[in-house]
Amino acid sequence: MIHNIKCVNPFFEDVLEGRKTFEVRKNDRRYKVGDLLLLHEYNPEREVYMKRRCLVEVTYMIKGTSLYGIRKGYAILGIRNFEYDPERLDLEKFNQMNVDSKK
Image (cartoon, rainbow, N blue to C red; front, side, top):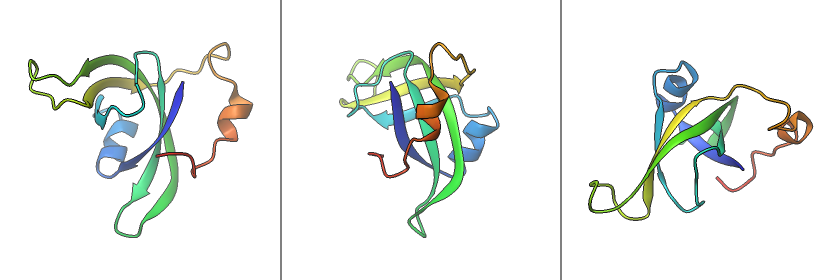
């Protein structure tokens, strides 16, 4: 599954450059290992989406429980830049993805 989500700077830039290899997210989308996150660079001050996007793959996941000190309903997602595989991702559908999707 591909999830369209907002990502603000400096976090977006750090993911793009490979320095940030995790996301802390509310787990309202039932994330799972193998999912793709299409991160849309977002400017919260101007409330606008920028032109840059970054596609990453969820490689690891810790769901929130008191045992790990992560709030219930949240998750830490291990991510890495996605390596395109035509059998896993239809580029036509990917290129048609709309920024107006649920973020």
